[in-house]
Image 1 (cartoon, one colour):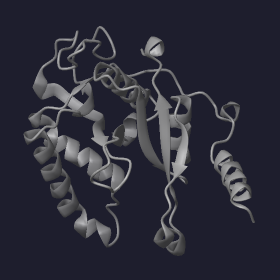
Image 2 (image 1 turned 90 degrees about the vertical axis):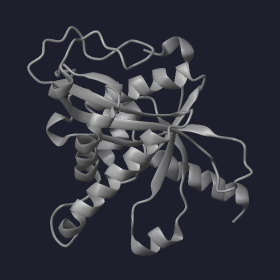
Image 3 (image 1 turned 135 degrees about the vertical axis):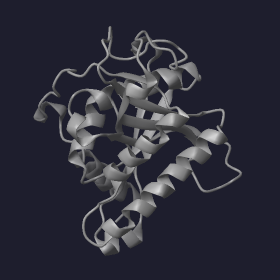
Image 4 (image 1 turned 120 degrees about the vertical axis):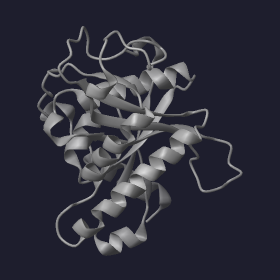
Length: 235
């Protein structure tokens, strides 16, 4: 088989990973009076709990390791906040308890200021996403970098209410403010709900990560998704 033929077959298989958007039902409209801001040190305990619940199982043998994993996540977050890089931020979706809100999320460029007056002690972290600069390869001499989204998570009882969409939209504004015109993220090929979310948000398949060990073990592949940011279309 010629190299050109293999490329065509790979392209056809890649297309099958993303069904046509009309096959997916629309997501429900925003229902929660939350807003998005940058993370604070006082958020780290609850943020670590949210990430641990979202990405690690608590039942079975792994349940014994859950407290250790949560502490590890907390320390990683604390380290990143104590030594921030130029192109790094962690956004959190916040639901103020017992507060009256005038909007859903901050529109200020700083993102640390909001149009709502709330008590910090009443903030409930219901979602998060991190934005950072990454290299496209393991080559330390490669100067090409791209802006990457990671650890997008929403507390289970608040999912499908617009939280993830607002986190993605705010990330786009941050990227634009930093002068970037593209965003990238990974998703597992069997995470159909996340893939639907990203498709509706404008992300398309860039590449499929090759992992022979994962293929042998029957693990799902990671898909690298890309979204070009049209400056005149940013929310």
